Length: 103
Image 1: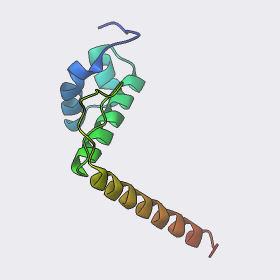
Image 2: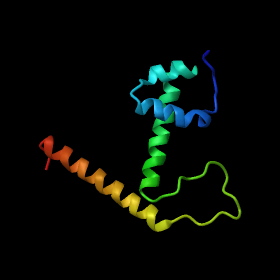
Image 3: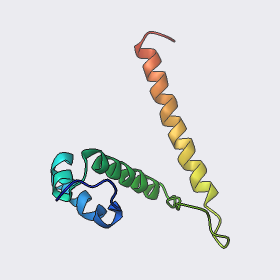
Image 4: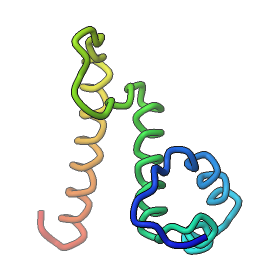
């Protein structure tokens, strides 16, 4: 396949994720689909981010302008996810400061 400037990767997402789980490199996947390595890297990053949010109980944020009849988002789950993220960040910063000899 030849290299392309833009491709809607959603149609190949499941197959790309399966290839990555099977042990293929990003370069091999990119060559197979005619994509760049960066496109595959970004797709996998977005996929992992979406999976983490689903695992945390959050609905993935829809792209684009919100619909007028859209249901309100789950505020409690969003707050719990944000608190967990901030706790992890604080722990990492404390560990870093201790390892550098500050505090």
